[in-house]
Length: 77
View 1 (cartoon, rainbow, N blue to C red):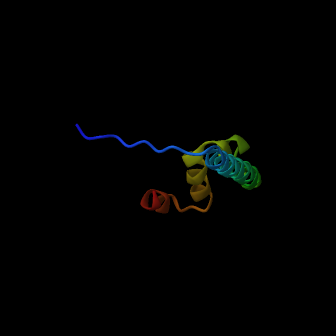
View 2: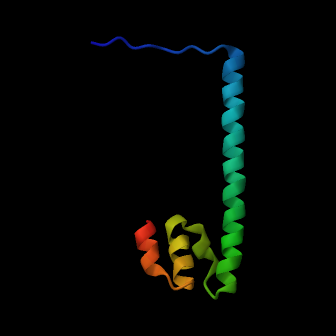
C-alpha cells in the first residue's frame, strides 16, 4: 500500500488560510447577489418575470431568448 502524506499547518498558516477562504466566499456571495439584482432588473424590463434570474442556467437561456439567439445558447453551453 502506498504511504499517505499528511500536511500539518501552523496556527498562523491555518488562520491565514481560513481568512483567505472566508474572504473569497464573501466576495463570491456579493458578486452573485449583484448579478442576480442586475439580471432581475433586465428581465423585468424585457417583460419576463424577475424570479427567472434566480435559476442559474435558465436565466442565461432567458437572456438569449430575449435577444432571439436561442441557437447560440446551445452552442455556447
